[in-house]
Amino acid sequence: MSETAVRAGAQAALPSDAALRAVIDAELAPLVKQIDGDGLYPAEAMRALGGAGLFAHHLAAHAPRPSIAAAIDAMAAVGETCMSTAFCTWCQDAAGWYLEQSDNTALRDELQPGLAVGAAMGGTGLSNPMKSLSGLETFKLRGRRVPGGYEVSGVLPWVSNLGPGHLFGTVFVDADRPDHRVMAMIRCGQPGVDLKQNAHFVALEGTGTYSVLFRRAFIADDMLLADPLGDMIRRIKAGFILLQTGMGLGVTEACIALMREADVTHGHTNQHLPRRADDFAADLLAVRAEIAHLAATPLEQAPEYLRAVLTARLRISELTLEAGQAALMHAGARGYLLGSPVNRRIREGHFVAIITPSIRHLRGELSRPELRLAPERLH
Image (cartoon, rainbow, N blue to C red):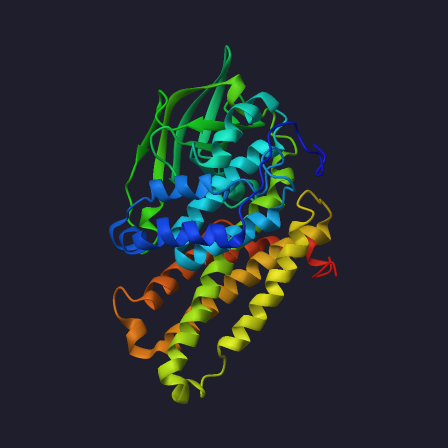
């Protein structure tokens, strides 16, 4: 599919940054403590954000000028208020991106409009497949060809932005042909697909995160994104990774704001810290510019481009961790209180570092010979 191709369909002007922030302030901000403390999944806020155009920026049939960079910026705006909801936004965006790159145009036409406006919710079950394709794990799902589709069994741990009727994309292996992989969209609650919540996390409890149990679930041919998998992962990979950076950008921006807030009363002691808000703001501006540059060509396949994508993703992960630590140093004991904004941002920032691809996964990818010899940047 051509990167610049614009498929037929109604395209409405997307909201301004101010309009999106107004929805964030009205619909999301009042729920943040419940989301973080009680594990509330912000269903109504997600629908409101979808109605405001949050999930449509990168989809050709739903945006006048489809842009991964615009989707990242919108996600970052959400992350400044609530990282959990920014993560759900990434899941939603990723589901739309899988459909964007699929050759199954009928499935795209059926499912993408609902995902684009938040009428349907979507997740991404590619953590295990991505690790498996990198040789870090084995595929958790096995399918067998039956008339009209596949029968799939296995368990996917920790898939997010899920609930009854939600959709998510994943990959399974044909049990009779181990080298044959298939990517499909799955609907939660369909026969043979059950959700189980068997873990509790230190943060991001309000993200609809479940283990998904497949018991001879029938996945019809018309729900397949790619069969065989072919180059589908290569087509989605850069966009998949770049979209994740919106979470780190948002949390880092929030940490900088917390540093500035602490300086109002404690600037006289904070002046002795080695890195201050302005230092992090400069670093954030630089990595944001690099991400925007890379996001302009998400279907690029050159090794040096992929290296630059992985490097940018690694850098925002590290910067988010550093900014959380610095926010705590600026706030002092107040930041160490249970329920403080600094406490939440540190926990959120650690998630940016461990979500697939994690820092260790990214470093492993960057050590591969075909990437290690490529230049760090394209410009």
